[in-house]
Length: 298
Image (cartoon, rainbow, N blue to C red; front, side):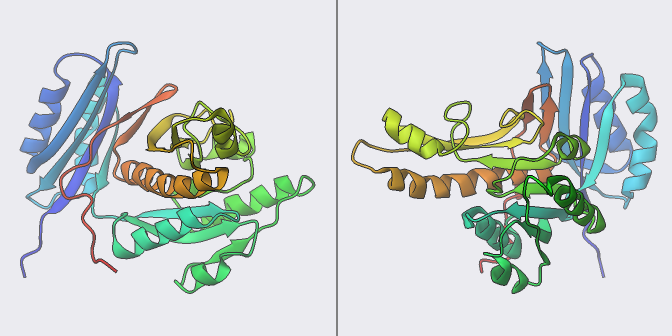
């Protein structure tokens, strides 16, 4: 039986200089790699170069072989780099409180293959979504969080993440502020959805704030979590138009769809290796052809 060639991606960031693209292209070609998609960005402000290249390994090279062979080039250009298997599903832990629209959306997208992730656990401070989660054979962990037990609760959460081998934590409307220690431990590995178009309308009840200001556009922002509340590098944003005739409750309902879509797009970009943290900002490359294809429709 003929096996399909492996599809990999190479992520690179390094100081900007000439010869980087040539060195990468030559290495991949000499290693049996056929480039199918590539994107790059040279940040003149920071002097950093970013590149993501998808390729097919036509001679069956393994990730370990590719990684080892590329090391001398990486050393020459002072690169941070990683080869990733585009077919591998990333393990994700989802954290949620009492708003379940983002969780339900992620469960569905994961089930049909629209997101290349395996949800290996759901952590909540409430029991609201236990049945819907365990019915999909996903472990559900209810951990109550109070000011008195916050440190103990977070230690338990972090053990769950590590024990199940999760590569990413998704805050799907998890209404607890994470400690500095947890943010630092999983730096670049926690994605949040904020139900407003940051930097406007931070904090509690942003839709009410927007309603009282009479805005005509509401939106959502997905960003990496840092110890600075709602200040992490932004991955994805979107908006929807509202009018004077709509109520605060309308804003909330309309916002749910935007939140779900923005969070899913941010996760898709992260797990496909399309996001690079660049100081307080991000570089987000376009999706490769075929990366949105679903395994099935239901």
